[in-house]
Image (cartoon, rainbow, N blue to C red; front, side, top):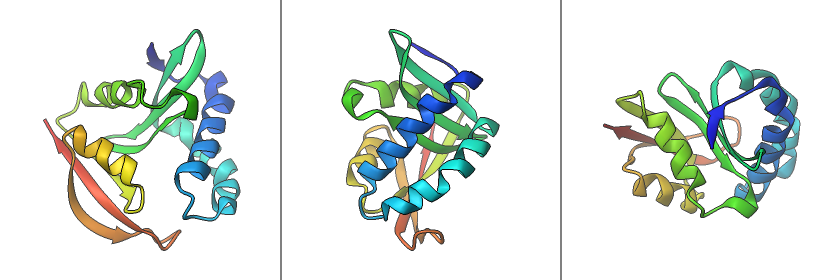
Length: 140
């Protein structure tokens, strides 16, 4: 089930955020994610957030600001079960366009977005990590 974020969800989604960033972005030092944890925890509720739950346990979430996807995160044991696609489709519901940045080294995410009709529109460098990233866009 997908529902809107509630304040009491914050610790669960931040645990997913930290664990998945460390695991998926192993080309970025773990300390980067740990050092940004409190900042993200503070600003995350300012976004439009939807959580995917199964038996009242949060399995994943998506954060959106206007037409920009700030992130889709699915806990490791729940990957490849359609949760990311369901969250992405929720974001597409009331929008004609979406965009996001994804690290160039994150092939799994790039392939996921391409499969979901996103295209790479430009390549940049993330000023915080020094890593190359793609700006990807989707149009209805």
